[in-house]
Length: 196
Image 1: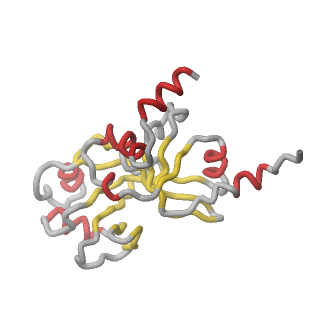
Image 2: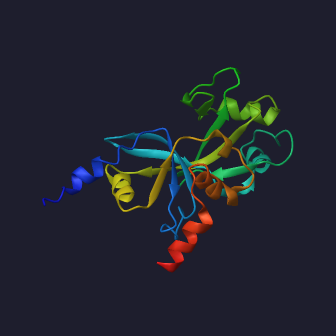
Image 3: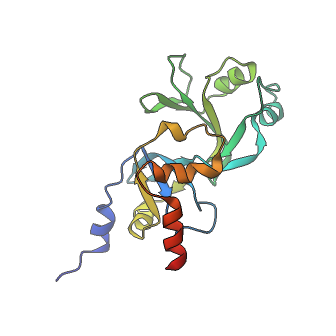
C-alpha cells in the first residue's frame, strides 16, 4: 500500500471560511486551549479569524474612555481578545439588523458583519451603535499550510458558524456549547483525553 504524501493529507482537510474552529482537548496548553475561533479567511497566503471566548482584562466602557471616545452607554460589557496577532487593533463583530454600513465593513455570514471602523466605536460610545456586538482586540493567524497541519494532527474540530455562540457573557461555557452544537459531549472528550 502506498502512503499518501503529507501535501495530499493537508489538502484533504477541505477547510473553508467562514467556519468555527473548536479546540480539541489535546490542545490543552497555551492561548488556544478550549478556544472557539470564528475563521474569517483561508487561502494560499494563510488563515485568519477571531477567538470568540477569551475575555480581555478590561470592559468596554474602560476601553472607550481610554480611547477618548467617552464612557460608553449602558452596563459594562466585556471586551474580547481576538488573538495574539496585532493585539492593539480592534475589530467589531455585530449583528446586521439593517442598520447603516460602516467603512471597512464586510459580511461574514448572512446576519453578521465585521468592521474596523472608528465611527462604529464612536456610535457605540454614544449608545447609537448595533444592539448586539462584540469588540475583539487582535486576531488569530496561521501561515500558509500551518492550520492544515494542525488539523491533520487533530488539534481542531470544525463546525458551521453558530451565531448563538456570539456575544455571550459565559465565556467559560462557549467551548462546551460549541461542541454540544455538533453532538459532542465535552465532559466525555475530557475524560477520554485524561485516560489516554
